[in-house]
Image (tube, rainbow, N blue to C red; front, side):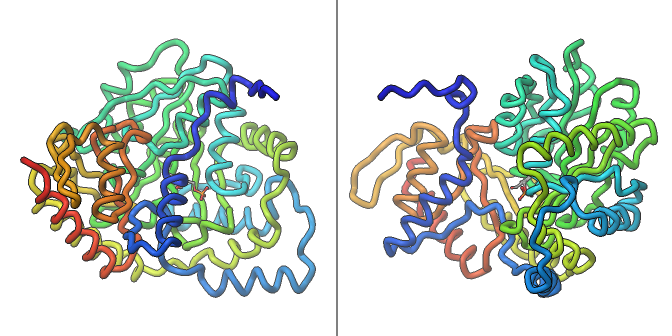
Length: 401
Ligand SMILES: Cc1ncc(COP(=O)(O)O)c(C=O)c1O
């Protein structure tokens, strides 16, 4: 039987981070001692308060459909969190809870974009943004950044890229994959430029709690005019170690939130009732110790990378990723353990070699719009990181520099 997949399905590729993670787990299951640096999730557990709240939800029979936008108690609690922690004022009907921030973002693109509408997307970008924009028949317009610019777009660059079809811009600070966080001054400068436009701002702030030496500022706080056009995206996955519970949310203009709620009511309906109760239990439990632990790991990894010949890396100050540039390794000759010499063809090939030769699993930068870089997640133990960096050093020695 011949399958005639829709164009939409033909064009979509699986999330490279998730598929590499699967490959790595399969190797580990076969007994290989792989250090997995691909994961986009914290290694600390879900707070007990969240787990107990979920257990209570089950035993109390809180196991039915809820309002599509989420239970009002949770939306109220999120509104309080946004007021206290971010200086943002929203009412519960300006908030929608979804099955992970991934769904929150998809809801946004599906309700905001008409076919051909352009979304400005600073690169390197999280892999799902361009795919989701295209699924919504929008056009991702990539704004290139590099190490020299600290992986940050400038207000001038943004203004230059605007066309009559530009509908929105995506800001992700702290960033996946670069780990870079805009300073409050840089956010204000972007906000000032954007206030003079009619663009919507999709501000993905899911790593907001994980910043090191810089304060996260939501762009929605920069001007009241811009706040009305900003959709603040956040979730419980990264702050609370709750990736499997699937709870994310958007705060923004009531009309847009209502449209997202109608859209969601026909796709997944409400996020899991049990997870919503867990999220309610988690709010307010973030421990600053987590930030300290991550900061120490970041320092260790950046120091170890600085010692590698040919590797450069913009200094990250957020999330739990570093994004080294391996351009100078590409096209060089690598001598395999077997003695065979081969040329490192490109960043994807480098990723494969790191896995097969050095037993380190990283995510090649191609999916993030930066093919010569690779992403390391340091959301793993120090012994794992030490082992990985030692293996990386040994790998580098086998390259003819
Ligand atoms: C930048 C960014 N936004 C959103 C998400 C989605 O998170 P979740 O759907 O688990 O809430 C992720 C997950 O990796 C991410 O890195």
